[in-house]
Image (cartoon, rainbow, N blue to C red):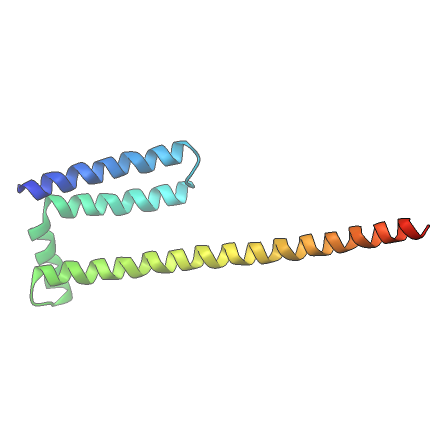
Length: 120
């Protein structure tokens, strides 16, 4: 194993411990825990056997070089992460819009009640 592989293994294991810690502090849902741990486990496996895995992916995808295969797969995973982020942001925006509408309606009702009390 090369020195960079040792460094990658240490960093990935530290990230795995960090993600578990975030889950224990209730900063992550269990779905996020499973997702990130699976992704980090894949990264760990790739960092341990990069040549063999890249050649296998190369043969499956029919690409010229193993490194190209790793780049293609990593770009695909990046797009999946971006899509997941987009979905989460869209959901948060919809919730904020709904909360704003509810608060505005309740504020208007309170304002109308106060005006009615002032008239009486």
